[in-house]
Length: 338
Image (cartoon, rainbow, N blue to C red; front, side, top):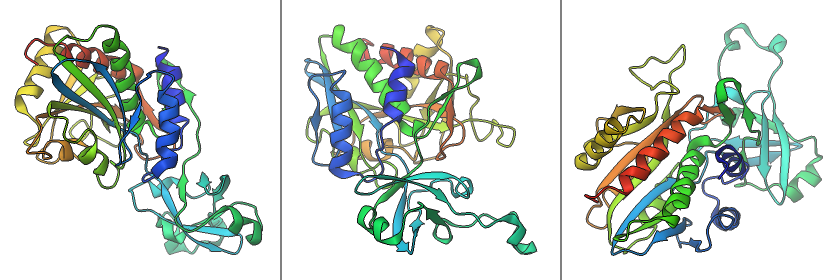
């Protein structure tokens, strides 16, 4: 597998939360290039499976991305709301894509600075105070766009210096990539005693419903979830974030299974895999919060990859961290104590 090409393919997909059948159809088609056993759950998650052993393990990454929602068509402009926590600071004069009857490109309207009052300068407007200009007349616009339609950041995959990459929706297409990397590894040589379901969960950004329902009733002995976490920058200290290039971030939290976290840390140390320990006081803000409490409780662990500019069009990661997470979790899933 060409890791960067696969990541580019995954980030090229528009998979807003919630996206329904359009999401699952697009994702299932993309995954069918890598697996011949793609299935879709009623909750909108997609699953591929490796192995045929008695013990069943769930590996989870969410496929949905943050988006905005069309609230109103006002003349030739589109009004939006922000229900998912996307970064509204990047909206003025930014490009957006409205997923209506067909994708419609637009630019978020920004008041010229010359016309702002002194007390308005430097302030961030909420999403519902902004408009998207599509350049279309109202009659045409209303045929293509409707209230409730998702609005996403446009797709652009950029390779930067030092091997780093930037794209929209790295949260959590990085996790989806790790799912595919591990599936490719395990489908060739899966331990005889396990079956691994790789789930591409829906709706993590809002409800966690995908993780609550995917593979329900299959009797998982444990679950491993992938997500992203915050990377340091000149304004964000190491007390609140992790450095790009620091490796896989292993979660430690009261909601996570401590024995699994300890096993991940031990494997990383024994095999010289770059890693950090990410300590959380309770809920993790990831699919682990749903997985660990469903069906009487599933032992759950979390591995994350740091990214910069989360929930913006230019999320940035270091592929070396993805590689570290893959090596760690490949060894983890093959451990004798599983």
